[in-house]
Length: 308
View 1 (cartoon, one colour):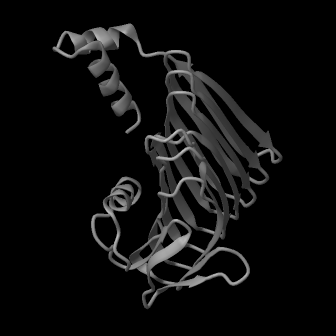
View 2 (cartoon, helix red, strand yellow; view 1 turned 60 degrees about the vertical axis):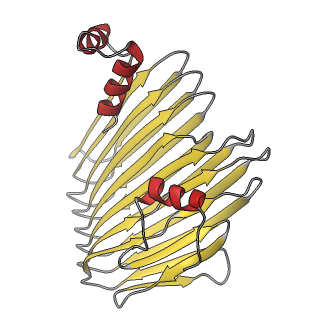
């Protein structure tokens, strides 16, 4: 793997918790170039030939293995679009660590757009972690637009952890999922915006087979003059169960729009949505301040606990 500078190393730590070369399969992308890649006996990573991106193929029956595919950007004015396709074999059980970190110290916007498509085999289990992070002192924006498509075969399970806590000026996240019989999708989104940042999240989940289920939950904090929009639609096309929830804290002059949606096309589709937006309760602040914390420290403690 190519040598990295201190900024690149810091970004990798923030988005993928990597301090050294990871175990197992990996592909590390920096400023539109692969700086390190390794396939294993059960996980093969190959470059696409028609567009920028990769195919990641995981053999059937692969257990307790991981693949890391982080992206980092440190050049101002850089814009890229990447397509990554994941083929997860039947009866496998794997962890996929993705994410993007942008450090922009220049005057031009830097942007990473990524399309991830997951083809999850019968009875396979996948945990997918995607973290976004921005830093840098420049006036140029840090822009991230991830698009995720999930196709889940019978009896498969996918758990998605989507995290954006700091430094991303503009993001538009779109996620669609198609679930066959007995498939299970779990989404946990954690998001914080500040300054004049904008964050849009949209989910459309189609429960197409008997016994399919989805649980889509977002927790977010909007500070300063930032804006968030959360759209979550669950469509029940068979006897199934679906739940979507948005739980948000609004601060300063922040704005939040929650748009939950349910569509039942089967008499045995059991669908539920919940949405709550509010400020930090005064009694919570008072209690922590009596323990010696300043008001700002008390707010940070509450936010950190809320976003865990």
